[in-house]
Amino acid sequence: MSSFDWSGLMRAGLRGLGLKPGDFWQLTPVELMLMLGRDGGDAPLNRARLTELAQAFPDKDKGGSNG
Image: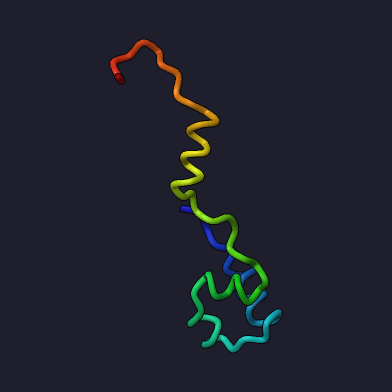
């Protein structure tokens, strides 16, 4: 489990955004990141991207019994 930088998040929310403590603690991490201008990163892997990766990097048969 990764640790959160709570002091950094609180500083960004309370000082940077001017939130009141109660308002800060009611936010979800996603809401806070959006308010700070972060889009949340890359989208999760979907079926189309998985198919694309499987075609680009096919499994190599090593003589096993996988068909």
